[in-house]
Image (cartoon, rainbow, N blue to C red; front, side, top):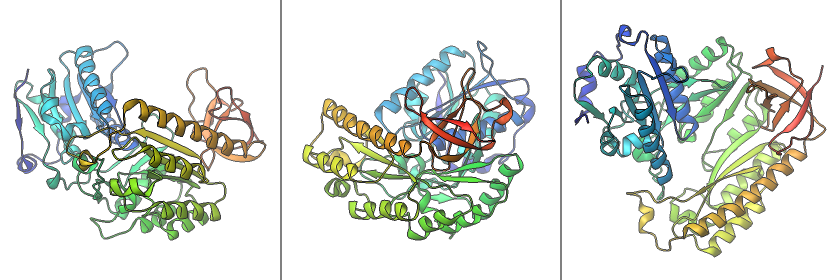
Length: 460
């Protein structure tokens, strides 16, 4: 097993910063494995594009890769375990490959990952933007000691840009990284560092490049995107207005925004904008004010309900997804019942339900009252049933209507699918094969067999 050595922040200044020798990448193959959020997938896709431009091809089925990249998540203990399993599996399936592990788990537990046989490089948040250079160096010095490059959270300052599509029709534009909120249950600030962002000018330029490549829809991603502007003195509202003016981009979606940062001016602008879709994803986490205080969230249920009501006043058909965590420390059965009633009374579309997972080093571990796993499961099932009912009711209201859908490339033997402006998923069986990434008008029919989409027919 390789012996790993820590490299401090000065390592960056001792190298030819940002420079790689592409000759070492020629005729090599790579495999990628990503866990976690859309931001992780966007970052992996960006690295894949950079490696491809340097001469690296995606590994073929049954072939051993020369380079393995695992982009990790650490939002729960289950996510940590899946990361370790993925690393072991790729090391076994691709013996002799140069194995790179990055992402949140790599930042939080670099020593543990370094102890896995076959891992060559562990890359933390601060060094992620230099990962091409680090792989280049590692490939050139395979006989050297392996390295952990994971600086302390307080030293994470770099914003690594990412705008990529991968195998999707939609592009994902990273506008912000890190978080300053330090909620009691969460390790994200330790894994990704403090809030930081790219400039509006640089992000607009990336959106223009997407349009030049033929992209029509961009999802705006980040860790806490409403906090945009900490490092540039700009605001998220200014970013929204600037992106809306980019010619060629016909759709934007805001991936997730804190309720206290979703202002009236942002909601009202989306309602009248050219390209921002009536689609919001808003983390609630609990519908009980006592639990929100234990979590150190920066709003209460009254503010959250007001945000939902404002959206529905100006965009009655808006899709609203909501994140909820069940079984956090301190969530008694009475507090959960309060959450269930609150969510039942909200005019929302879908719930993203997560079971609380204890994370080392978080302040939540000091809170009394631990919820047993079976009770977490029961509460999750209740909220998932509520979510299904609300989503199907929302879809049903659109049956018989017309909508514009951006078609996405189907899997073999499957019909085209896509989403309306307000994120109703549809299947379009009669779309010609060349209609991938095209906006088409459709008439919405009934549910498909598993009720995950509405069937639709193109309108001539």
